Image (tube, rainbow, N blue to C red):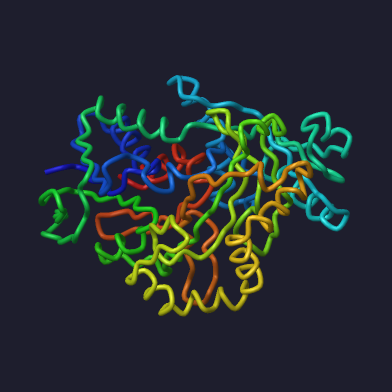
Length: 393
């Protein structure tokens, strides 16, 4: 019998395991991950950014935990020798029409308690000499980190505290016997007093296995990246982002320095036909049927079909993608970009077509389910873990 069981070996699940064991010394904890490695999906396939918290609605969990996570993640990486760098970020307006949105973003960042400085085009050139813009915001606290390394260290710490962490163990069903949960998995049956699920791309399905209703469904979007060829990496010193469209949940194609010395460009965001569909032509019939049979998908498609069509066209046209990069980095050519590993974002959508924008933790009977943890979840993972544990008596 375990005191706690966690489903999901991404960064949120592993951070929660560590936090529970620190708060409850001697507790018996089980963590189940269906894949053969930690961080196999969103946690290991993101842009590797330690976000500042500038983008998020003031007062939201994203704003609060993102800001606090910026500091705690950098501190964790420093303390445990994990590759990271606080290199700062420029958010650039490439046309005069974007400047009011840039200023509004700066106001939001300051309201969230983030250090933000408006800089001129000339000042931006001092920071990123090869970037073109008419104005920019400098966000010094943004950085980069090796999140796979973070996950490996969190798993090691959880094991040091006595946690039972199992890879290759898929949750199949959940049954209840009095106050005890019985987890039926591909690795056998286990019993626990309290269940926490952090299942990422499958968060809604796993919650429903426990008869918890998140009130929404995951619609998967593939983030497609290129990277700069080695001879062009010197053109970008840190992180360069466009001014985001506040109507759209994605941040647009940006340039991201990585801890291994590379520079990623992306992501392009397109509807995926499988929750783990990393290839352009990957299709999972169950996943696809759920998408096309979901009223919320058609509602969101009606709102964003033009944006979606543009993203899809850019997905199959390298020249279109290159032009998106050239808006900020004009010296880049198509030959300077090579495909990089894609990721999938679990975008949670209500039946009415509303995007669930904030972190969402749903309480079940003897359980807690993290049903929405998009960016900046990796940055905020240590703080999300604290928020989960705060709800446990």
